[in-house]
Image 1 (cartoon, helix red, strand yellow):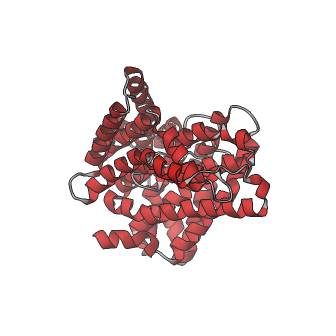
Image 2 (cartoon, rainbow, N blue to C red; image 1 turned 60 degrees about the vertical axis):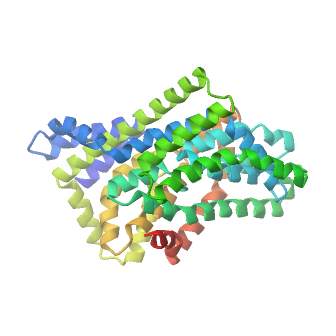
Image 3 (cartoon, rainbow, N blue to C red; image 1 turned 135 degrees about the vertical axis):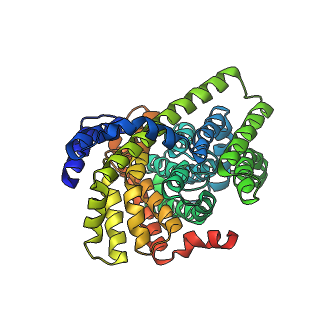
Length: 427
């Protein structure tokens, strides 16, 4: 049964069927094969109950927040400010790529939006300043992954819904690992450009006066971050209400800078509707598939086969890491989370792992999937913005940053407090 389901899923994905549809079709196939009852009649109820979750309202709101900031032009000014402050490091503007991605991640909650926003501004600088193209492109793809780890993160909201975990605690747990990963990305750039100075391009010189003057451009995204995250931890708003506050703040900023036009508003809403529709289709299809798997005993079979291995918690963690890295080569990140977490999380929690810590580990693994071929979504985003050249250059440049993610996973495994300290302080 397990082998049949896995083979069918790989075949459907191999046929280039969209993942949201593939998960639903797999459920429709497994129902008559292994169930005596017409489980497909529950689709309507499942679709309603899955979407009728107040916390999920935060998803389109965070997407809209990122769309407004993107189309209002804040990214260009933010990137310019980051370039003035970080260009003195070996690697120059590649550090601005990571810094701007980190800051934008703290407002958008989306890895794709982060990679697309920063990439649009940064890629023209490659030839202008003579940077090593693969490493520069890799820094953009890797920097974009921070969007699903640093709060507010859409993926952490999804994990919270799937495991009934506290989203505010998950947000707190993601702060230290998120900024540590950004620092590790910058370390990769420093090491690479120290070994090969020519990779770092031409230096950009800036006076302290210019740097301090540019800080005004960092205020809007920082203000949105503190509005969203601060309102949650001050007890003034739930994550969904905080997302609405963030959207309101973004509208006010866009109007203040005279960027709030009907065209911008229409494009922001269209982009939000498209992204939300894709996400919710995946959520509904995965919920239906998980229902079919549970009702037919497939979930219990998978759980029994895994727990029956009799391995230690440490070895099980290693198995899960390898499992996600392999699966990430073939599945889109959100689909991978929604399909696997209902099965993986109970097993790992039963072995004694903290669900909050586990959420951060899974998010880091999902981040790695964003920049590993052949289905690394951020790789395609950066390549599409680049509009030319070989996809191999983006893949080659992203690989060193995957190593940085492995280092963070090792640190989280040996020092769980990196993720659990802040939630314990504010609990």
